[in-house]
Amino acid sequence: MFFIAISLSLFFGFISQTILSRTGIILSIIGIVFFVTLAVLFDMIGMAVTTAEKQKFIFWKNQNIKGAGVGYYLCTNAEKVCSFCSDVIGDICSTLCGALGACIVINLNNVFYDNSLILASSIFISSLIASLTIFFKAILKEYAIKNSNKIILFIGRILESFKKNKK
Image 1 (spheres, rainbow, N blue to C red):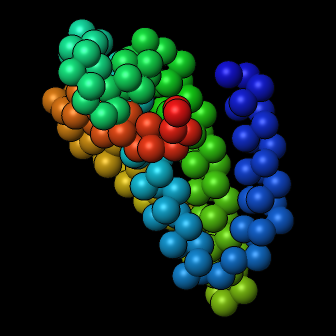
Image 2 (image 1 turned 180 degrees about the vertical axis):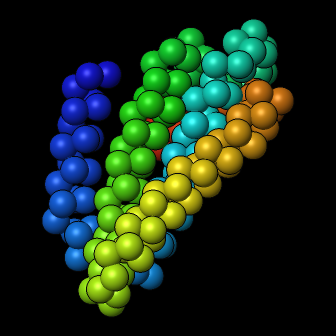
């Protein structure tokens, strides 16, 4: 997990320093919405995999329900899946949202020359990003707990579609 985290952090750190630093306000806002959504969805998956019922996936797997085998594998490795989804992806998305928020502040700095206004906008943007992320994670955590088996079966079906067909 350490090597995956460091590799992804280096990759996305490079992107945030090179590509994201040149984005305008509109693209930055779109990026923030995208990365907050990604973080929230992956957090939901992480929560769902820790609360999913492994026995149900064994039953579904024996009935040849599509995605049940992959879902069982995810449940068997719940701590790794949860750590990757909630921590690695979540932290990277948070870093990228911070970089995009900084891009907005830099662009505002080019328009407004009042330091107090720039400081206020910086505080407002970072607070807005954090509060939106926390709010939607809270909502989807409740959903993930109540619908964990359905979510992991759905993810299992998606992941299973990427597996090569065995002949």
